Amino acid sequence: MTQQTDSLSAALAAPKPKRSFAPSAGTVLAAIALAAAAGVWLYQQQATEAMKREVGDQLARHAQQANAATAREAAANERLRTLERELAQVTARQAEAQSQQATLATLYDALTRSETQRVLADLEQTLSFASQQLQLAGNVTSALVGLETVQNKLAELDRPELIPVRQAVARDIDRLKTQPYLDVVGISAKLDSLVGTVDKLPLAVDGYHHAAAPSSKADTRNWFERLGSELWGELRQLVRIREMDKPEAMLLTPEQAFFLRENVKLRLLDARTALLLRNEGAFRADLKAVDQYLAGYFDRDARETHNTQRTLAELSQQTLSMQLPSLAESLAAVRSARISTREVQQ
Image 1 (cartoon, rainbow, N blue to C red):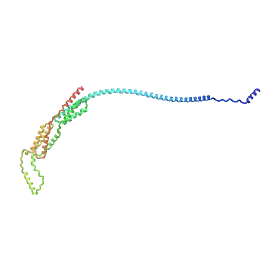
Image 2 (tube, helix red, strand yellow; image 1 turned 90 degrees about the vertical axis):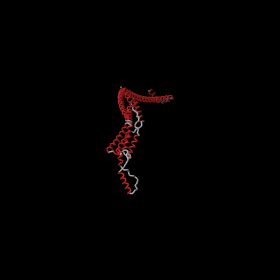
Image 3 (tube, rainbow, N blue to C red; image 1 turned 90 degrees about the horizontal axis):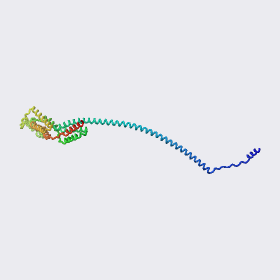
Image 4 (cartoon, rainbow, N blue to C red; image 1 turned 30 degrees about the vertical axis):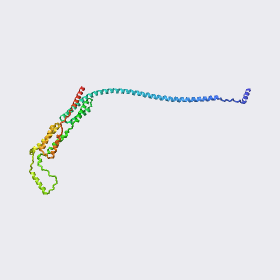
């Protein structure tokens, strides 16, 4: 009972005032520092995580790049090995091609020398023919054509060892071009024209058969005077007396006149042959004989006869004899080149 009384009295007793707790400034500062440290730690943890992720990404990218570079390097090495094999094949083919080229060059040189021999033989024949034309017929034009043909063939052949031949041919061409020009074709054409006009030339006997041409002056006489003059003219034509220094010209029969004209033609043709042979003596002799035929048997008063005699006089002034050069230098050069080529080929 006493205990219950004590408990009750204790419970009814006034409560004791509680003791208040106030944090100190150090505690507050420590808490703030702790919170700040926790924030910094959290921030560092986040930054570290972000850096780790970034570094991981970079490492992954670098790893991919390294793998790609490794793959490219492997491909490049494979390509390099392929190129090396191809280069080895190309080198082998090049060596084979060089060997074939050397063989072909040897064959070509042999064939070229044979071709050179053949061409030189043809050129020698051409030069021999041109030399004959020059010395026998004096045909400078034909000789020049032959020399220019030889020059063109030598240029097409283009062999260094044939340079002396080309030089000799060029010198002969220059010598021929400086020669005085004789128009053989023009003179031959004139002679042919004279041959064609021989049949049209009137003979002396034909000239005596024709009356004198009437005067072209105006006749003012009356009709009776003109009639008397015409009758007197006709009577005078019945009997004519003329002095003839060559009476045989009047006694030519038609058959003799034909052979006379043919003889004149033959002498003109002989003159053309002498022209081609450059025989000046025979050429002048034939022209002189033709002129004598014209003066003795043809009508000297006819215009055709005058024209023919004038042409003969012009042709007689031509100089046919010229000192023409020979083609001995070109021939000697070609023959020497043939001998040299044959010795090299053997």
